[in-house]
Image (cartoon, rainbow, N blue to C red):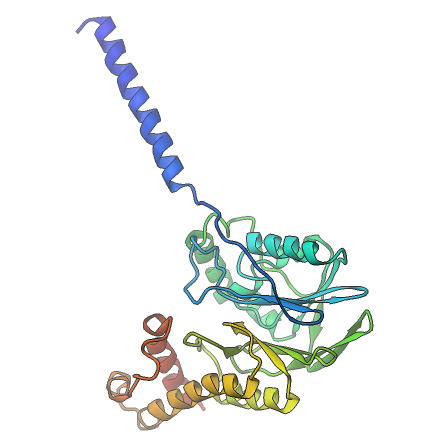
Length: 320
């Protein structure tokens, strides 16, 4: 084969490689289409609502809610969302509403979809508050492995630059945080959905940030929750008698008693349907098959979460 022909063939191959590499790179490059739209729910209170879906690269792990309150002396944020880019977007949206700086961020609990954005708030000088049990999570192998998996599952939005951030202030039971003449009543309510659950009540706004103690519009995530403690926490929410509840997932509620009932009834049914088998050490599979899931099976994330929820409750009842 002559040299000219070899060069011609080589050039075509190289050109093809560059073309296909370029095309592949363009096709695989994630497109950022996620927008945060704060909704005003009270005179000084806003929230953003995550998708009723599993976290993914496509949704940047935007599956949970976050909220904020604008005071005359700064902004108080509750939860940091599920990736640094989402936190950056939330900070940008806050700047559109007020020139006040974010001075405090309260973590409802240390689950990935609520805390992977913490580092962005730390960068802008916000003081971070969380329940003291969160220290156990941060030092756990579970947290380390979850972050490793998230750097793959939610890439490039969660990556090697994403870190787990500790609180500046660890709360043991209760704390009244006063900023700009507004009080934020922070209460420990765990172990419930998580060991380190907090809820945040703003009396002047009659707004309660409930974290993942309340779910709306989707099947709750039970995980390793203390379902009995969770039911008790829901009773504590109702005692506060808020006008508005901002849940960890789903739309805000202007009828808290009615909307809390969904989470309560679901947890009660999990316990009722699994209790006999758990106590008698009967097989979980049989108990799950015999339960009537018709009220819930059409809801978002039923297939992804319900069986796992039931199994975790089955195990937790045995441990009680």
